[in-house]
Figure 1 (cartoon, one colour):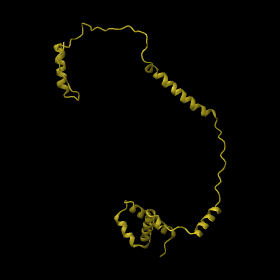
Figure 2: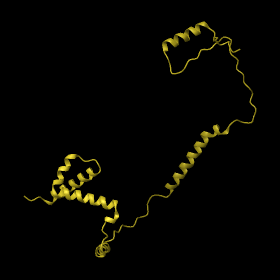
Figure 3: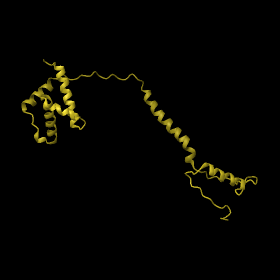
Length: 172
């Protein structure tokens, strides 16, 4: 029974992919059974020959003068790839100016927003404003406030913030 050339080519590609994957360390062990087949062994030998030549250039065979002459003749006989001339763009040229305008507008807006931060303080003297505590506010020594805070600490549980206790009047 004869095989078609398409199926042979598909098997060759399969062999090449399998050998390549196995050489890269990605293949499976059951592929090794294919080395008993002539095509598999030939592909294996070819890949090893390529690897050996890449590692040691002295193993490579330099092409003969006849081969180089045939290659030069084949390249000379090839038709050049002719691409049509590129037509000038029909887009208006004013569109290129818009990008410059957009950059200028962005810089101006950043400068406008950053101006109060970059200006710093003015040299004009400003009147000093003092805020006095209102006598009607709750004192820190208020027992109802400390009861509330203690109950809050017990219900809230431990937190990531270390709590420090201190006496209010001790430092004065």
